[in-house]
Length: 245
Image (cartoon, rainbow, N blue to C red; front, top):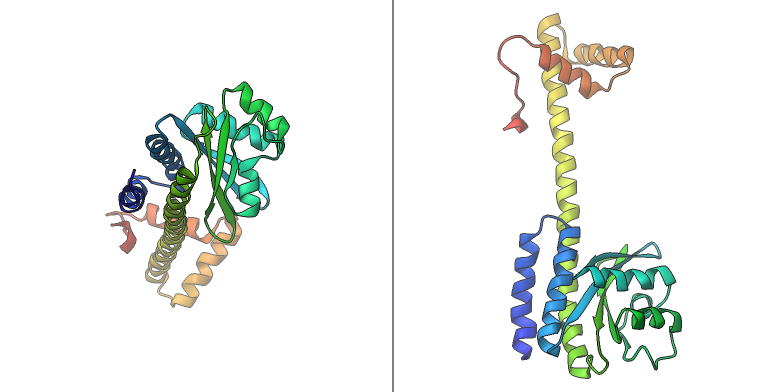
């Protein structure tokens, strides 16, 4: 392992990961797999990873590198405390080096031991003002998360957090753009319908809008639905708005 790989190579792979996913949920699932694979290569034995999201003081498991990783992470959520939740609360790295000797979370550690997990590492991820996430790494033995591995995980988490914040912003921007486009399409359909009413009744735009509004009220339909019906019932070629193309 070299710092160049942990930095440049991981950053490039995370960029590719972000570009290859369609939404934040898909990105988180791929992120857990990539995170587990990255530390597995560095440690030399299998490391699994869950992703925990905290929003409005409620935590939930949102992704995992394997079914077992999801199970181990959800066990912590069901109990209500553990290293990952502590990492979310303190926004700092939390290491559970040995589930048989650490006194902090005995009930959760018994569950981990029963599943063959001997150590865990919680790494917080900064997302934004409304939510925070954490990577929850699981090892089948003790002594795996040494200082060098923890430092690599922290550096990787910084990169992953940046990619995650970008994914959230892209998702939010895309949602807003789609909402705006839909609103513009509705507005355009209403304007076209208004023009048809003006031509049919030889009236002003204000009078045409009054007619459309009255029909909308009498039928208990939304104005955009009235406009869409007018366009559908128009004889001849289909009327298309600017945004249909």
